[in-house]
Amino acid sequence: MENGERRKSNVQRPTPNEVASVKMQNQGYDLEERLLNYSVRSIKIAEPLPNTRAGNHIAGQLIRSGTLPYPNHGEAQAAESRRDFIHKLRISLKELRETQRWLKLVQSVPLIRDPDLLCDMLRETEELMKIFIASVKTAGKKQK
Image 1 (tube, rainbow, N blue to C red):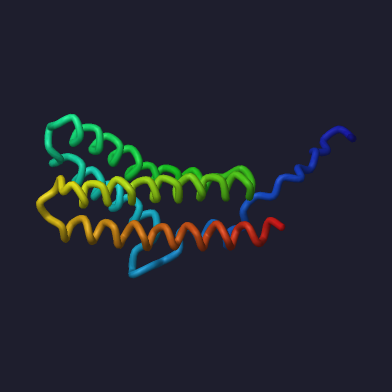
Image 2: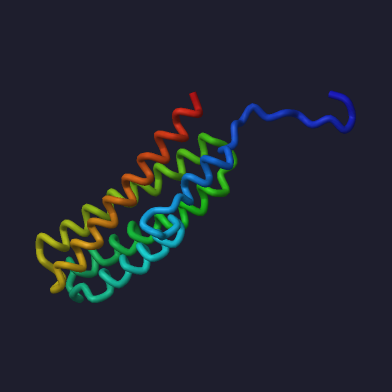
C-alpha cells in the first residue's frame, strides 16, 4: 500500500434506503417516535402492577423488554455494516416478542384492570413486529 492510500473494507454498510426503511412512516408516526411511545407505554403498564412477587417480577421484565426496541433501533441506525444493521433489527424484534409474551401473561392472570390498555399495546406490538420483520427481510435480500 502506498502512503496515503486507505485500505478498502469489504464490510457492506446499510444503504441510506435501508436506514430510511427503519425510519419508515406508518399511521402518521415515524418509527423512532412510535418506539419511544412504546417504551413509555411499557413503563406505564408496568408501574401500577401489584407490589407482589409476581407483579414485581413481571413489571421488571416488562420494563426491560418493552424499552429495549427504542435504543436498539438507534443502534441499527448507526450500524457499522449491513450485517450489524440486521443484527440490531433482530434484537429489537426479539425484545418485541418477549414483551408480547409478558403482556399476554399480564392479561391472562389478570394483573391490570384496564383490558383495553393491554389490547391496544398488544396490537401495537404486533404492528411493530411486522415492521421489523419486513425490514430484516429487505436488508437480508440485499446482503445476498
